[in-house]
Image 1: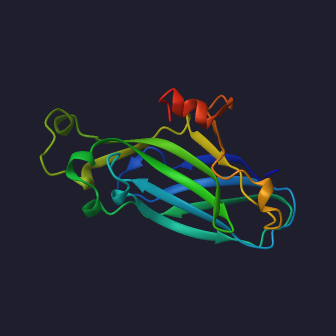
Image 2: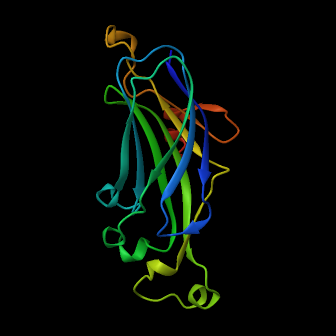
Image 3: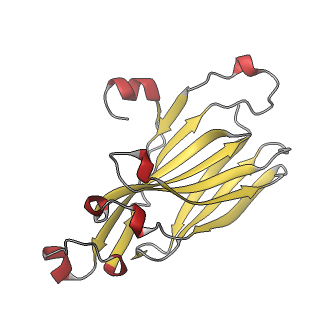
Length: 187
């Protein structure tokens, strides 16, 4: 059973300018004291075509974490425009919020992000070279995609953990086996 339950994530400063920091208010519950830190990351997906364009915007270590309910605001600088392919700068992408314990990722919260020009003229006639200072970022905060992974919390009984098993939740919090989703080409 998971020892940490992410109860809520609130996307702050949304929509905003592309150049503004990402901000997430994270509320989680720890069911018992954790001896080691939780590792939180914000990852910007620069291109759906290749992970090489993914940018880890920030990593923060929280802990050791006592039993109880906790909340913090995780803020990260925006992605470096020079690392985003020109063809992928404007339009829809993804930002991921992940958390790991003992180098094992146990939750991933993904949000669709729409980067578009705020100016009507630029929307209709976008420049060939993206003008990042004129882009607006809008995170679809109402529909996160949550993926939970089973991990070995105690590092004592490795046989009890099924590696690679994951549960995917939609915003309606219906749990679906990820292998079923993969067979349906949904994941």
